[in-house]
Amino acid sequence: MGIRITAQRVLAAAVSLGAVAAFGDSLEGGDTAWILTSTALVLFMTIPGLALFYGGLVRANSVLSVLLQCFAITCLVTILWLILGYSLAFGDSVASVVGGLGKFLYNGVGEDAMSGTIPESIFATFQLTFAIITPALIVGAFVERIRFSAVLLFTAFWSLLVYAPITHWVWGGGWLGGMGLMDFAGGTVVHITAGTAAVVAAVVLGPRRGFPDHTQPPHNMTLTIAGAAMLWVGWFGFNGGSALAANGDAAMALTVTHISAAAGAFTWMMIEWARYGKPSALGAVTGMVAGLGTITPASGFVGPAGGLVIGIAAGSVCFFATNFMKRTLKIDDSLDVFPVHGVGGALGTILTGVFASTALGIFAGQGFTTEMATIASQIGVQALGVLATVAYTAIGTFIILKVVDLLVGGARVSDEEETEGLDLVSHNERGYTL
Image (tube, rainbow, N blue to C red; front, top):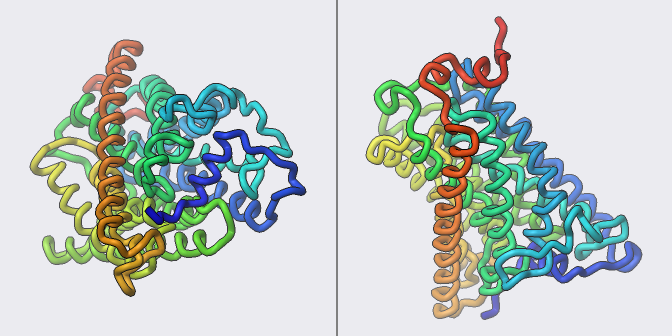
């Protein structure tokens, strides 16, 4: 098929096979330094980046609850990843569906354990930051109306039963990776899973009070724009780091990530300006996130011109998807997780099969040959990856939400508690005391 395999998939497969070597045999200082840096950048995306981005978009009386949810998810997923998550995602494959328990509590991940040219410990921690931000993204679907205990239980079950198996399918030696799915940095693993889970959660929990006729505007766009800027910079580690090396793949991934973010933001802003007479800061940062999410699966495969097209497509398609969700379907996915991340991730995954081709001249990538049959076949694999990820995530999320609802005696807060705000109701604190 001639497909160029990503460093992430190769090294993840090596980890799943228990590839271990002494530092002196294969350690590359430059690669290690870059992944250490990328790991910090991706964690920075969740706290403070995503926390501030989401926090500014809710009402003032629930801002602290959103910040704490992102913070607590970081803590909880870290513990779960150490105990079981990493093993389920990257342990020895069981029927190409999930990893085994061989890496329970990071078994075998010592100072001398290697994953390709980097220590396995930093590979595991880099992958942990992806496991953290994915459930944190889902928070945007149910802000202001869910119990804190429900958030923690949902995150625990979802991380182990949905995120870890799909990660194994794609990067850990599972069946989708074996079929040749091209997902450089998480179009399926992160964005489609988070987006799909978000829309299921929004439907199961129901809309906020007053939706869609009386919705509250963001209480602090300054926080949101600050968080968005942190996401933009952190995404260089998210996509560039997924090369798992300091090489040309990382450089191109970073380049097209920036281009797509800028194109997505500018496109969304121009559409708003044309339709409503004024561009908005909220629209610009949402378009930026759409561009970032959509380029993610393609980032190591496409070239700069392809990244530009993907960014423009993200800004326009995700804009109309957002309006369709709220105005036609009337689903209160509060902070637009599905139309931005779910739709963007699916769009980017499909377009990877197009722009990775070397047959498009200046728009070509470096993924595979010019044969049309090969291109069509790859697009089919990409579509299968999207459908399988959506189906498994939707079913798993629905079941988990119903179980959590029973365990906590109702995942949703009362109308009175929602009106009062989750800062006081859930934490007995206020985000602001001015």
